[in-house]
Picture 1: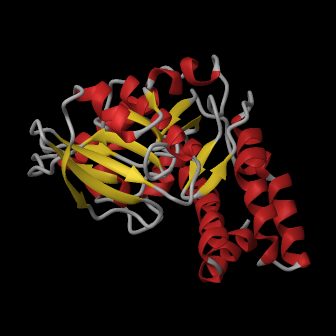
Picture 2: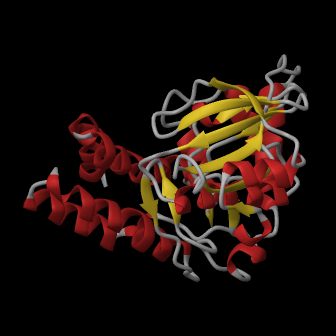
Picture 3: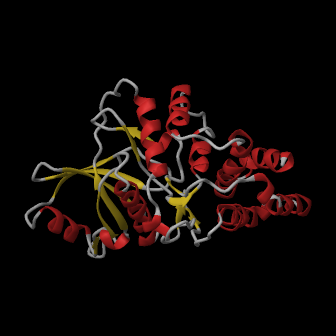
Length: 301
């Protein structure tokens, strides 16, 4: 799917190809964003305003993966996400990888904003996923990133096997610097028990993969738009669980989601296992502050 997104060898070439040879950057404005990338609004001399991400520390594959994820969400035709204009490395000037996106201007939220988001997310979770994995498989076309750490997406026919091998096991291995040998043995036992603790979904779902409130913005249409994905095909419960990890969404969202997409029995018991992946990732990115949350879940299960 990256092949469907335009690649460029310089920012100058990208602007010329997308908007015409006479188009230049009239003004570059720093935009508030996450901790990983530098973000800018680019005002072009033809009046166009676009969004650009740069990262001097990452390879081009970092933005190629984001472009692929955004394109996958867009192709579902279910929910708003910024249009990808192109990506590449600015070989002529900075030598820095970049990603160019549609600039999403914020509007006033519509009435029923959270209900609408729930319905659109449920529709995305019910969309066909064969183009991303092959019929009935879990994973994704390529590996991508969760935060600034690589996320493996090797294809598996079983969701439980995929979640064990591509999600929890690599994170536990990386977390061995924080966990004692006895705690690592507990982690191994947890991995062995996943067949008892998780369930196969009724259908595979396209997931945003990093769905917390910071990755949901309001567009000019007043509806929710998704940004900064870590896309893969998995169990819809994994997306829903993460919405509850860092503060959660309003009750209206969950009520509407459960009306639009019936949950399998026992979701509440499985929720912490899905979020263990993200807590381990935060432990591996940011350090011991996340250790108590990780071990609470490990000890419980």
